Image (cartoon, rainbow, N blue to C red; front, side, top):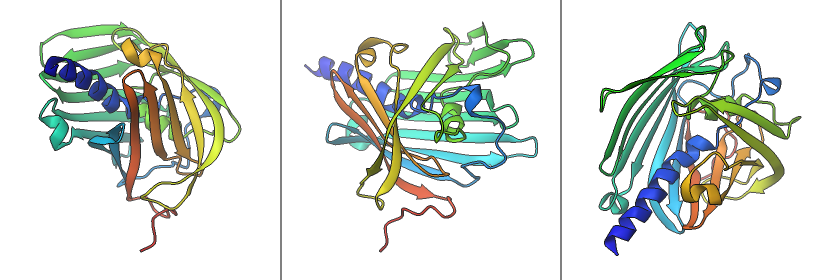
Length: 269
């Protein structure tokens, strides 16, 4: 019984902690170019709580920590399981994405993930002039080269901020390429509707809802459905992600916004 629970937690926590990375996988060159006005700024920090059903299992933060003179952004995400989940399956992940604002593409991605007994430390560099990328694992010393489109790909983290730069007011569909050492994946996203979202942590927020395709995922995740609510304003901040899967409903909810000038939905005390 306990082994079965561990396997379930393994699947659920792996999905829940890539859930917010997946939702950003919307793209499409007709929708975006190098944007003079960015919806994010240095100092922005978004905090989310993750739930499996009614049970909170962890939290994560997404930060914009640097924009340098070469028009490169540094994005950082930190995800940790809570005390209860950590007794069965501790999670402590840190990911960094270096993003080229001129070409709107990832140039360098690093991930340090501790998930149960599984430890991953990898760096991926994208060499667009060669149409190649390399992934170096510092855990096992393995290095892989793989082909990428020369016009650009996204990593799992840069996708989120790439999405926020897009014009969704006049488009209802988009696709983008996720650069991966196993294969490059095309991820499609469809805008469904607009909705006023009510949460416990903010005033009612106008949002638009989008849905990604799930075919490129594996295992039980492929059999589920997922929806994302994004603030319908210039910030385009993801407010809520919900996935209905065979093992239950997984949710990521925004609970705190810091460093965002003129964010209008804070609760009034």
